[in-house]
Length: 442
Image 1: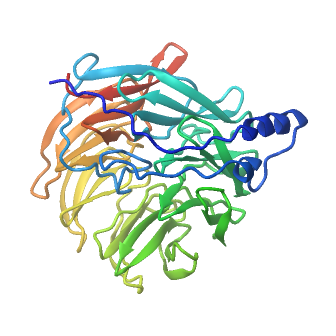
Image 2 (image 1 turned 45 degrees about the vertical axis):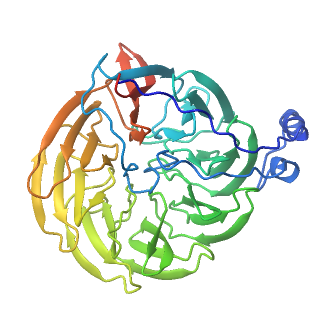
Image 3 (image 1 turned 180 degrees about the vertical axis):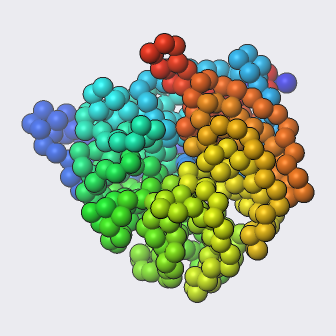
C-alpha cells in the first residue's frame, strides 16, 4: 500500500515588498542586524495556524518528548531499497533533526568551509529541494569534532519557522516564513564556545523560548514569535551546557524546565520567575528532560554520570538517582517506565517512580541521536546509522528489527504521516555527503 502525499494547507500570509529591499540595502552598507531586525518593523505578522496532529514541528516532536502521534503505521524494516520512499542530498553539515510540517520538511545546515548557516526546505511527498535561505553568510561556531555549526532543530508554529544559530561569538534566533523569507532576527546574548551549541528553540503558548548556556554567564529568553521582541530574559549560571528548554503542565501550572548548570530549574513561562530549583544535576547536559506528570528527569554525563527524578510539586525533592551515563540521547517515558539509550550503546528500562532497573541490553556502538517512539515501538539510531527497533515493555528487552542507513548519524529521526525521516551521512574516501531519507510503506 502506497502512502499518498497530503494536500498542502493554506496559511494566511501577507508578504511585505519593502522588507527584501531593506534587507538588500542593509547588506550592501554592512549594517549588522541587532536585537530586532527591520523585517519585523515593516512586515505584518503572519497568522500562525497550529501544526497538524501528526506533524513533527520541532525538536522531540509534537509533544516535545520524542513520541509521535498515535494511529500511524510505519515500517519496522528498511534497507538500501526496501521501504525507502525517497532520498535527497543535503548540502553542508548539521546535526539538527528534520522538522515536518504541512507538505514540507525543514533542516538547518552549515557550510563549514565558509561558515555560512542556512535553513533548507524539501517537498514532503518527493524530497524535491524547494529553497535554501542563508541566515548568516559567515561566522558559524563549532568546536567538538562531533558538533556542527547547525546542531539545532527548526521549530514551527504553523505560520513561522524559528532557528537558533551560534554565530560570531553570539547566539541568534531567526524567524522565517514557510517560503524562506526572513521575518526577524534577535541577538539573544554573547556566547563563548566550549563544545558547541545544541539548544533548539521551543514554541509554546505564543512565545519562543531560547537558551544559551555558556561559561561567561548565559541567558534564557522568551521572544514574541511575530516580532522577535524580548518579552523577558533571565541570566543563567556561568557554566557550559547544551540542553534544550521544554514546557510541561505539572501540578496545575505550566513549568519551563531547564536542566544542567548543576541544577534543575522550573520557571514561569509567562514571566521568567523561578518556580523552584534544585541543585545536584550535572554541569553539562545535552538531553532534554521528560516527565511522568509528577517528576522531571535529569540525565547527564559530565562531570559525573546520573539519572535523577526531581519532584515537580515545587519542592524539587529527589525521589531517586543512579549513576548511569545518559549524556547525549534523551530519555523516553511510557506507562510508568523510563527507556534510556546509554551513550555506550546499552538500552535500559527503569521504573519511573522508584528507579528500579527492569532490564539492560547491549546494542553495540555509540549513540548521539535521541530515540523516538510510536505507540509501543522504540527506534534508536547509533552513530554508524544502525537503527534498533524494539518494544517498550518493562518485562524484557524485545528486539523487533535492526536496520542500516548510511555510514554516520548524529541527528534524531522524525516520525510523521506514517513515515520516518532520517538525516544521515554517506562517506566515499574523503568525501562526506549528508542525505535526507524518507522511510515508508511502498
